[in-house]
Structures are given as C-alpha cells and as structure tokens.
Amino acid sequence: QVQLVESGGGLVQAGGSLRLACAASGRAFSRYAMAWFRQAPGKERTSVARISTSGGNTYYTDSVKGRFTISRDNAKNTMYLQMNSLKPEDTAVYFCTAGRTYWGTPDYWGQGTQVTISS
Image (cartoon, rainbow, N blue to C red):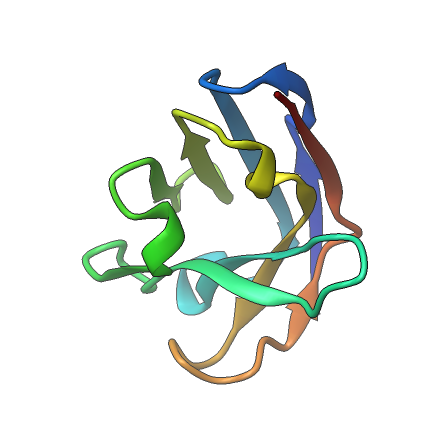
C-alpha cells in the first residue's frame, strides 16, 4: 500500500512558476513508476508527465514540453513537478500517482492539489 500526499499548489499569475511535491509513504517507493495527472473543470483527467522507477525515463504531454520538469528523489520518497511559464490553461487539480508499470493505469492516487493560473 502506498499513500500519496501532494503539496505546492496555489494561485500564480501567467508566466510564473510553481513546484509541486508528492510525498509517498509505505514501502518500496523506488519500485513504482510515478506520474502527474491533472483535471480541469469540466474536462477529463489526463496524464501530464511520467517518470520511471530510476528517474532515467520521462514523458511529457505535448502541451507542457519545455515548461514542466518531472523528477524524483527515491531516498526521500518524493516526486516533484517543476512548472515554469505557466498559462491559464494549466489551471487544474493536479494528482500524483504511483503504478507498477510506466504506461499502465496507476494503482495509487493522491487527493490532488489545486493549481490556478490567472491571466
């Protein structure tokens, strides 16, 4: 069992930056592929970025490439999402996830953190 807690959300102006963190408790954090999903009001939940167990492989959805960076610190059981050059369309609830496979449906979800970008 893995428990995930996100932090770092908030309200910033367009062009600003935020750093989200996901703290994991439970066993074997380093064995899980991790990801960030987001859900905007009235829209489906979508994958934003993924990172492999070692951190050596990453994936970004096209709309955030070059602006967002996903990383993890297995010694601290924590994953991060550095978000730069934020746009109003990045406004969403951001969810941290953990899964047994890199591309599969996540097995565990955090409660989400709100990110709001004002224009």
